Every structure is written in structure tokens, then in C-alpha cells.
Image (tube, rainbow, N blue to C red; front, side, top):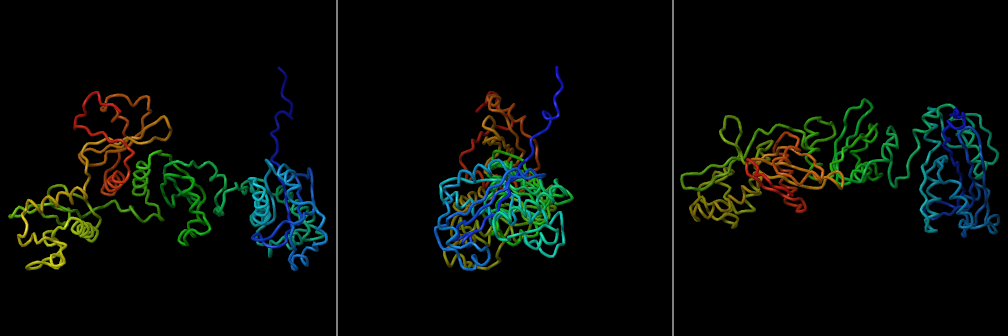
Length: 478
């Protein structure tokens, strides 16, 4: 067997389409008057193309003064459509490079969109890589930058001369630090400002499925944990130019991203809550506290009325209906239930008033404290309130979508508490329920988790619920 030649062992080099355009004005109402493209492999120029273009509109006077391109010069020039195919093919499968790339790339995308053509290229901005490879220069405008590094420019603000200068600059940067050059290549992702320390490649393969995502700083410490039914869309939304100002500091600190697919929205909600409590990311505020010192307890008074009250769990016997992080959170829950079910706030210990309270006077209470309705009538509504507060199911397996089309997700609840979640292949799902429960990985239960499950199941009816006795029946299947 013959030995491979060096040429056979050499991988093809990435090629770059270095572009500059001149226009009639701004991107909102401007058109291209001149374009130049130089194909480059990082070491040498391979091909070049340039042409004037007829914009079919007048050129702004200040642009004429800047570029020297007049209406007369472009009057008989070809239209963009006449060169669209060549421009498309020259930039195809190549990295689109320009000095202030968003300007040139944005104009070309708009021109191709007018022709009903999608134009998507990876991009590279020579301003960006200059700031990293040659920091602390007084200016990064093309003219002043070239003067600083000794690159000669003949006719600044004409497409071919600017492209040639950019190509010379690019070749210099590539020779000096090709690793940084490659690291700053960005995919075409609309309306996204990629964080300065995040390699754009981190965003390319994030799936559009349910799961949990993690943002890391430069020391590989987790900054933030989030969840979504569409990981790709949600992660990119953090980097939208109009995102809230509170994300500005987070945006600067992000160095890497990871994610875990769950397939199921419910599992994503549960995993996010679990990870936040476990890892305590500095940016996450909700769900961080793992301690729930208060609870809502029930008791029955001498008259037979069921009383609901907020109490500290310490030294109390019995399980609360629901645990809460503080007295005021519990009070809000009880006030909501009192309003919803016309319960007596005095019997809940929220007021200590002799005679009928204000809520009775405005007909939000039926006067239970004063015996104006029987305990039996009142307790029916208390039971409804209890069901709203606690887990409505006892022993249940929730079956939902999995991470692939060949998989189910499983969430187990037992004795009204969260047990854990897991996944099972569909071909393995047709077996006794007792066996299916073996696929569930045990997790910690807490009131936040129970609230998540209760809220999710109240809104989503797509998942299948299988109730079972404490010792699961044999032969139960999907």
C-alpha cells in the first residue's frame, strides 16, 4: 500500500471574502454604488472583483464629497441584480470579512432580500480582531489604523482601495495571531450581540428543544441558570440589543455556555429549580432559598370549623399543608384563598375582631365566625382551598415527552411529595408500572418543587397521569 502524499494529508484552508462597499447613504434608505471583493486564504490573495453599481437613486451630497462617486459615474453602471449571482458565489462557503462588518454585510443582506434571496454568511470584523491583537491604538478607523501600522492607502473611501488595505491588514493580523482570528468568526444570528468573551461557536449548536442552560464566567464558575421549552431561542434572547439593562454586567462576564436537554417542559422546570438551590448562582434570585421555616397548618375548633393558620414549623407536630419561606408569603396565600373561596379571615388567624369583620360587611365572608353558616357548609369551601394549596395527587406517575421522539419522560409523586424524574425508551415502556418506577432517579422534594408541579399540571393537559397504590399493581402499562 502506497504512503499518502503530503498534499493528501493537508486539510483545505478556510478562505475569506474580504469586502468593501460604497453607498448612497445609510442602510435605512441607501443603496450600493460600488463593491469590491478580494478572496484570501490568510496568507495571500487568490482573486479579486470590483464594479460600480447603479443605485437608481441620487447619491447624497456628503457621500459624493467623501467618496468622489457621482451620479454621472453610476448612471450607466450595471444594477446589483446583474452581478448578484457572482457576488453570491464569490462569498459562498467563505468567511465574510470587512472593516465594521455589520455595515457592509447588512447592505448586502438587504440587497439580496430585495431579490427574494437569503444571504447568510459567517462574518469577521477586522475592527474586532484589531482591538484584540493590536490593543490600545488611538483609533481603529480604517484610514488611521492603516497609518498606525504602516499600510499605504491610495484612494480612501473607494471600494477596491479600501478592500485592498483591509486585505493587507487582515493578512498581517492572521500571521500575528491566527487563533484569535478564527475565534472571532461569528455565525449569522439576527439581532444578537454576542458577548465579547464568548466564542460565537458556543451558540451554533444549541438545540431548539426544552432544557436547562448554564452561563459560566472566566473561572468556569456558574453565573446563571435558566430553562426554556426552546433553548436556542431563549439563550439568544439574553443577547438581544434591547434586553434589560440588568443583563449588561452578566453579558460582559459570560465566557462559555452549556445546556442539558430534557425534552419535557416539566422536567426542565424541576431541574432548573433543583440546580439553582444546589449551585446558588449569583445572578439567580428566585428559588435560591432551600429553607422553609413556616407552614400553613389546619385544625378544627370546638364548633367543628376547619381553621387554616400560618405557624412556625419548629416544635409543631404533623405535616403542614404547604411550607413557605416567611410569614408574609403564607399570609398572601391565605388572603388569596379567603377571597377565592369566601373564607373567614378571623378563623384563619389573620384578624382578631369582636363581632363581624369588614369582609362580612362587603359580602366577601359569610359570617362563619358568628355562626351564620354551619361548619359543614364552611368546611366544603375550606377543603377546596386546601386542594389549591397542596398537591392534589397522592401517588402518581406523570408521563411526558422525552429528549428524543423514541423516549418518554417520567416524573414521580408519592404521598403528595416529589420523588424524582427519569427517562425511558418507548420500546421499554410497555411493562409493569413497578418496573417503570425503577427508571426514576431520586431527587430532593421541597415546597417550590411541589408548587411547580401543581402549577404545571393545572395548565398542561398533554401529559399522561397514572395513579397507583403505594404498592404498585402488577401489569400496569401505557
